[in-house]
Image 1 (cartoon, rainbow, N blue to C red):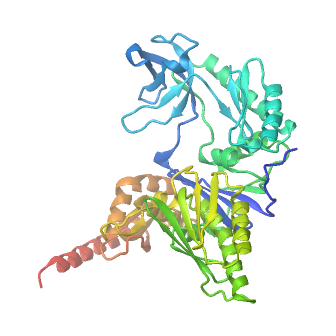
Image 2: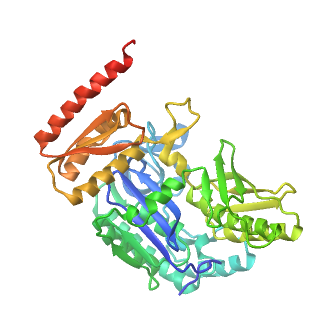
Image 3: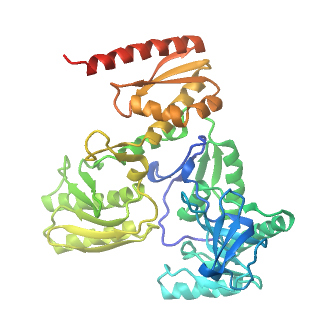
Length: 506
């Protein structure tokens, strides 16, 4: 059995994975029924890093100490010869490589023959000799303990590097991780010996797999998935990753969309707002700038039940808890400045700093809390691990000279698709007519519509409305294909007339 590092037991912890849509995967972590983290990956953002291929060398360029290799995806990958010091790389040679950097626009992926397979607590290095410990484990006594285990677990033909998540974990759990990774590596070796290059040998579970492996710490009670294929993969993955102490894996079959059922969609919307209300009636105002994030703490409606000193301290302590949650939820990194309510007593200031250290202790994105100034300002830094939620879901407003923001077109499009899927469960009509903002409607027609019609098995007509708000949409008609198309033509004629009247001089 194992225990994760310095993590207090949360009474109810769930992972909720919305994998039903081909275009987008969303994975949420719920703690005591509230959203604590959200991960979103769109179809065109799927990561290739970590995939393992049997490649064929196409050309070697000694002048830049590099080679181009084919991995079968249409673009040659780039291999630094310094990464292949122990082998002679020549044209037409076949070798097993791993992607270290995904392809970008006009550049192919970067690959290396030095492979690594990450598990929950350690990384297996095939053909390596490493017996290392993550530098993020700072306590020297713990580093010595884990280094001892690493040397015991290292094999003749593989090395191991202990990950940060292994802090406090016993040898049995580490050994289980090694055995699971060795079984995976033997399977990759077997496939490489039987298949011709170029071909894919190993691909992880994508976003959901990375969250289960890299982002989760502490106990997980349940994993809910709404995709049948992913459900089977998760069950297998969890049995390998978690050993005996594994969470329940549930296939969600409800008619109400999974994120809507658990209130996650609403919490995501709230995470884009400036003002965050606290349960006491106090509130935070969160402002993002290019250089830093500024958070202002206000007592709001909270008047307390004692004197002013205790009211201010209670507000600041509650705010500290929520600030830690909001930074995780919004994936905010970089410099953060918090304007807490002024506290007169040094004892109260130290109590607040202690609370901040406590609530950020289990944050996997390393956070450092600096001292509290006389003005009640606290500076902290948080490592940037991934794009923040606002940049993933929104963009600058096209109507107000970039001073505001709106939801991205693809964000609205995925909301529309989930809405269409939901009403599709309620009836089996042949066709549906949906109204949306004209620009958004055009984006959906150009990008997704034909795929949606095939997947949802119905005719979908998206009518662009010039008077609709940017993110507004609604069902206008449902029925037979002929009836819906006739109604759409009527609307198109009326919309054209309205636009002409609007641009005509008075």
